[in-house]
Length: 445
Image (cartoon, rainbow, N blue to C red; front, side, top):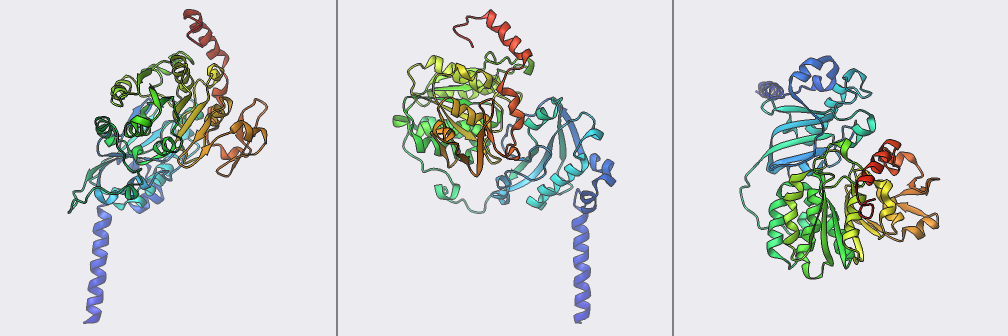
């Protein structure tokens, strides 16, 4: 009797395993040996090519970021913290098509795709089902590796919310890792909440915490309002709305890197896409949320931070503080125009999970400003650099012969491709000079 029961149990377990395996979209053998199944592998995907993918998250969507030529996710908690309340319904893997022909890729295409899928399935086995459509999105607007490295690489997940059996009361700030709500402009708060529902960056309270710790006065708030920054920028507006009477913010400036201009037309100092509004009442700058978003979302990775800061300073000569909400993962396209700035810049840096982009550290140092992250306030940079003792999160910095701060250990700088923007190339310099000759030199760089 016991022997029969044991045999029956084994048969039942085997059948269940076979059924489960039959429901998988990607078999274990296919993932372990993708080169042997290259054609079958590709047949399971719908492939689309676009110039550049701008990370924008719609309703019931979530982005998991890998980074260039890597398979591990940088933000796995985005799914794992709430996956039980979601059911995946579609997956899009986002690559760059660099080089243009797969046979020249340094990292084997099928191997990297399989590793990224394994990372996804390790996060949640429900992704590996036959009924879930899988897509590949190949970005083509990259001719050299540094350009490819700046583009987004990861997985876009579409999901269906799973209704909860019971509706709990609103979670406490401790549960959501969000700051305590305060009295403020209720109308503005509600508008920002509606706008930010689809941006997971709102769950990262870096900007809110930095503003709350420092409370600068007579300030201009300059916000990178490109695709990956809507959630972070909205945090600054939420903080201002909740603290309207004592926030110290007098004007809000948003920039989108050129109002959909093509990359070759983005001349440093003349890129545009910069908008401003008075900060009071807190509902007033909210007119810019969709206006600036609809006119452009960045297009490519580098941004016109210096131009936006210059415009903010030009229009607010009496401001004591200039605060920049910046994307650590984007290069400063027009860094070479740094000398046009005449006020210290307080930089709140978003997305520092891979370390600090030295361009922003140099911007803070050379303007006698400061740098702020989720938990750090890096001030008095000139004194620290002069003493030869500048170490941030274990990374030691030194000054180059070009008077730039850079990690002593080059391997600790994953943003080396941004170095090209410290100076204008001869071709770009000629473009700037031609543009200057057409404009009033008092108003431009």
